[in-house]
Length: 205
Image (cartoon, rainbow, N blue to C red; front, side):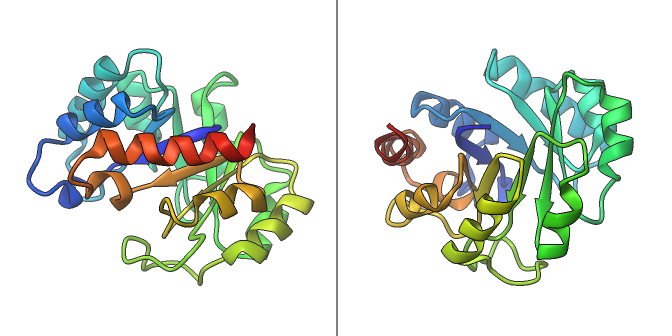
């Protein structure tokens, strides 16, 4: 899960269709999309996932929380939180080839994840952000670096990341960067994505 992941939020898209924002972000070089729908019924959620999968082509589509929606839509993976399906159960249902991510909000979560069958850890939130209000507190750069020295998993940082701090986040140990409002709320999503991707690549090369 390297590069830039767009985590969707229809409410942050300034009235634009989600597909439009995703299409424009694709033009800016995003590497994956995580579809997050907290209030959508299952049938509509599956339909939305199928529409995005068709739009994305080879770019991975990750479904937030819902293993059933991922299976029904043919998405490439699922991202679960600490109160969602246990990673062991999710892996058994999804199979070995699926991408499986896990959010970690405390050090205990990080330690427990060492033995869990996940492909990456979502370090959440990296910084304080209004889109992540149900977490235990921000990790910050020091927390991210501490996880990197301990964990066997690749890290994807999310929360309060923008062009001004994304380079520091990558240097602290994040292989991937996930953003919500930095793209969904941008007047020009393609340019916003391109700017973030450029910052990430400059640090990683």
